[in-house]
Figure 1 (cartoon, helix red, strand yellow):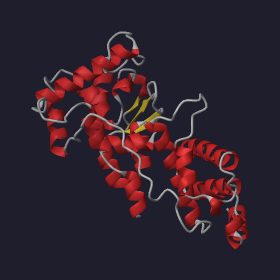
Figure 2 (cartoon, one colour):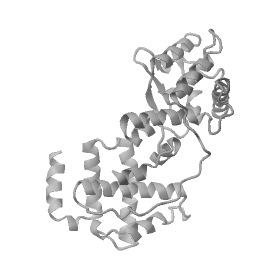
Figure 3 (cartoon, rainbow, N blue to C red):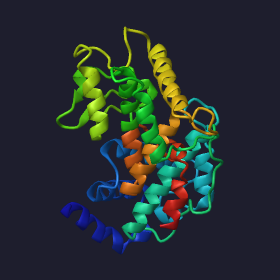
Figure 4 (cartoon, one colour):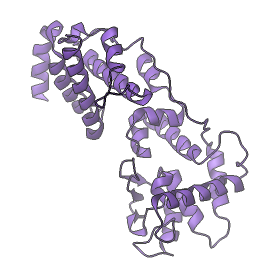
Length: 305
């Protein structure tokens, strides 16, 4: 922290001469010191900052932070990828998010007095319309999953989904991954997600503990047998769809298994105010995807702040 303070003091005096390379270092130290980003997120953003610096220097001849303007950023957003192809909407949005975060940090450090991304808006990715469940609907689904007093699989699947596990993760969670006393369960991240501990409510822990008592420690809680990733995911999706239908939500527009994640993500955002906390809880590597799932324009919220 002392190093950051000293570097900042010197840099502030000559802020107009701060290079993009120096800005990257100061921004990373600032975001780390303030806890604004996890280490994993910081690594991803640092990589994008490096690409932006190289593009600005080599293509635009821009070396200093003060020289970066909106056209430079727009050119970077549309620059071809390492394979020579045009960037996808997702790639362009990731680039914009990274540059926007860089300049937010620099403004907080008083090394920039403007944001060249301020007026840039990209088309949002198109996803099927998903409506988040309400608290009352989640409660109804809990009861619907308990079709009989002896059923344990469906409430276990619902409990894992409600806790934040994706349909691609649920089928791989074993009884050994559950720590009911600590009130948490380990999920592996699936094909594209992030492995993490998920906190459990009392209801969720109870249902998972009931299920664990019926299977072996190394047995999957939600999927009998040793099927493939796609088979497990399809089976889990079918269970969640069945529970939603049994709760009277099967024909409700916008309600689907992802509605559970949208419900949880909204609760996490309300509790923390941080889209990164939503992404972590849902095991997502993309802040944009986390915002899309809960239907929230986080970049607009950052601008308003």
